[in-house]
Length: 589
Ligand code: DON
Image (cartoon, rainbow, N blue to C red):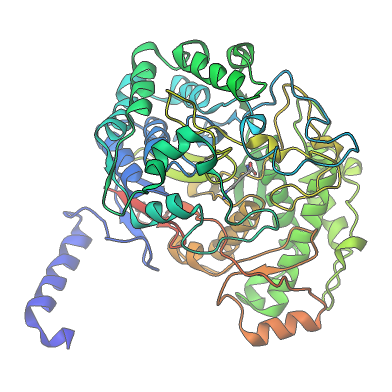
């Protein structure tokens, strides 16, 4: 039918001609396609279409990837309140075109008054929800300081100019997407995410009057297409614009945060805000089949676990076994099981506890760990103990990936932790506060909101950063920028990044295919394999069951990953944006 219509054929041919000679912007309307977005100069892949466009506008003005990251992160704080934030924290891995690399740690920290047992009752049991809902759940926010530090070190534009798009979006409003309307009114996603035993629909925003007024329209709810204006947030952004990023930590905004804390039983003080410092760290380095991996070191567990799993899997011919074959998936699951057992035992904030980083990411350690993998049989998780890396010692979240025309690259993952964080909005300042304190082990051996069992290394201490799973990652091929990737999804983040990397390197997929391909998740405990809807055939399930794998009775989608890949022959940038993701989109020029 289509080809009978001559006009359509003619237009398609003209488009193709322009496409290949490069006169047209390389764009496509929607991310949910196996065809990535192709761009000649720069790409921004983020969880929100408007924010991606804000980033591309900065790139077009001559800003670099770091400038664009600041504008995108601030825009997401307005248009993607689920996870975009001023009141949270995160990690940014940067690689500049000249080869310089850095990792900016702007993770929240535990307030000075936080204590080891602050979430336990007199009997020593964890009190339900207080580590994840309301004012006691809040870690000292790092986002504003982190973005400012990245800009100061590697940016080229003025802070004021990069705040402007977010300010405008907050003041003038933006049309609410169908997805945002749905999540605001139900506090659930349109698609079922990776299920957790303590998660799922729960009353959150409606419990806090300021959040209810701003985000739920006092119970009348925003409809798709309606404008969401955020005047208090616009005022906060205007103050940040005028007085600079330190305003958040020392100015009116800081005072508003602390007043709210005092009124609602929080422990975060003005001193905590004044003392907050983002940290510049060395990216963690690993390799996989000749590709160089640059990723996030502690206090994220993501980079270590990713490299450990890649080191284990490098010993097997995954390509030969084939994508989604039972043998290949068996090996990937066994690698996940072992890396998450090590995560639980060893990982925490390296400023407070000693973590055997070099051992955990060493190739020899992976060889040792792999010896316990039985090719024909699943290992029972309870029998998997963490390894002995010391012997080898020699070294609701959103992600965006940006590559500019010069080849500078940013992988940024930041978060409020759960969707809409603690649920509490700072009165008069218009932004939500994180619930990152739940990423600590409230009690060793008791699962947190993501069902993660964690060790003493991740117990609460004042000033300490809770262990994260965020895995912003940059990959090089022959020393050249090749892939920028990351995802939300709590512990599933690490396994999402792992599978995208395997899909590209072992299975030859482009970035959009690699992101869209179905995934699975295992985190050692609970000893249960979760796979995405329609991801496994009945044959595959049966084959894995016959090897002894235990399947969770839940299914759910994993994180909405955002990536950029470089075609090293043409130098084109390929944007991949997850079809699992809300109103996610890659944009480029
Ligand atoms: O840092 C972490 O690992 C968690 N706070 C991330 C939470 C998350 O990804 C929620 N998103 N779906």
